Length: 194
Image (cartoon, rainbow, N blue to C red):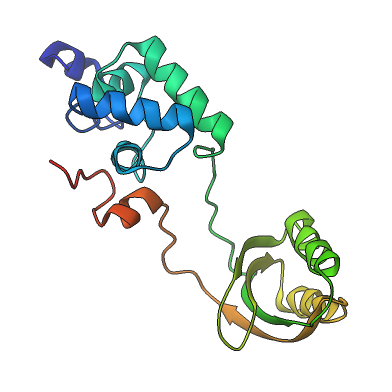
């Protein structure tokens, strides 16, 4: 990016790191088109995550492509589900963050599918993960208050796919969204191959 273009960047939007080499950029675009999470695509994503979204001009400069090609790349990322817009809101003082650990019953796959569908539709559920160990699921949720959280958990325990569970109240200290950088072992916005 020229010094003139950099000076036109809004002050609250840092310029994206130096452009990828053309060969790595082309490899990342091919991987993106195939939907393959390769190192070149993860490197591209790691450069973008964890920072304010760049302008179209900054993104094109970082990718070493035209603005139209950069827009097409972002459209592919959105269509594949790799890129989505999320808004992080810190719960208020009265809000109740909790984690439910749930052990499933030995039931048919349809019952487990219904249980996971229920969790997917539940707006209070933020994250669901299958886990190994004493429990089968870790469910992060946010509720208006403790009483609502406890009632929600009791209702989970009545599901035919759930055997038993445990509810813990939490306070989020840090929530980082830098998956590609974590996979690559770099810092958000970093380039492990540079």
